[in-house]
Length: 104
Image (spheres, helix red, strand yellow):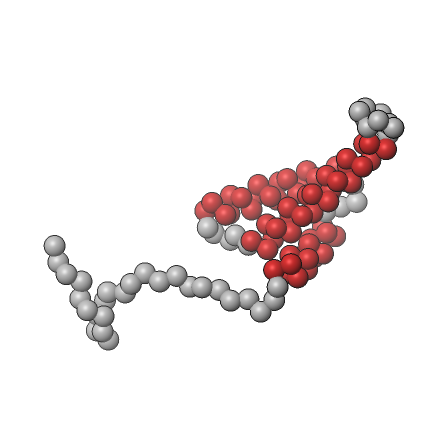
């Protein structure tokens, strides 16, 4: 087995290094801004927004698995918007019946 050449100016051996990111803002601020930016594109109907959010979250999960084009802040913002949409639809369904068992 051949020993790797010592690191130097003429060496072709480069150790694998990961680039570490640094952020100047807090995580919650970033997600809140991204959530506010995505909200107008969802449409007025809660059912349509839920379907759109599910589709977008599937795309984000695929991007996360492949490593190409993945944005963790966008993923968190989409998950937050989906939770809000589902909470609104559950509240609307519960308002249709005093016990909340039947939709209408």
